[in-house]
Length: 178
Image (cartoon, rainbow, N blue to C red; front, side, top):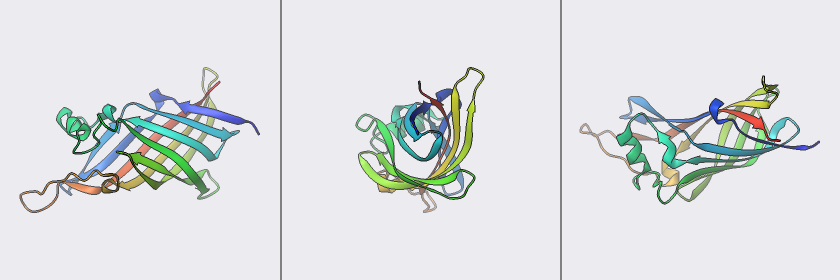
């Protein structure tokens, strides 16, 4: 079977995260600039080789002040570590409907840890322009402290401002490259 190469369709994809704030609600954010290179054998994505990057400068939470803090050395240190990177190491089928676990090396701030993401395969179709597209819903959790994102503060009542767990969600539409 022939190797096929895919890239992200940025107008139909999104990469988001959520973190508990004051331990009572979630605050959401996204990365607006990201790329991926995906190689498959035919249309079989279960063993895909994926390299994904997100530009830290593109972080957006709806608050310019918070975005600036996240780009600072307290968090991502965008000037020193401009990208977040994920590279697959293995995948395993969860069931026969196209759901699987994707394992890979996630690098944030030059710290690399193996993480697991749950992937729901939406299918492959041709769009109105003749492009072959594939869709995925991706979910996972990471501990931000594992990657050197340790900033936190205590509240007046003795609680903490941010949880350690960060939920990662993505809706990804790939387009086959010529």
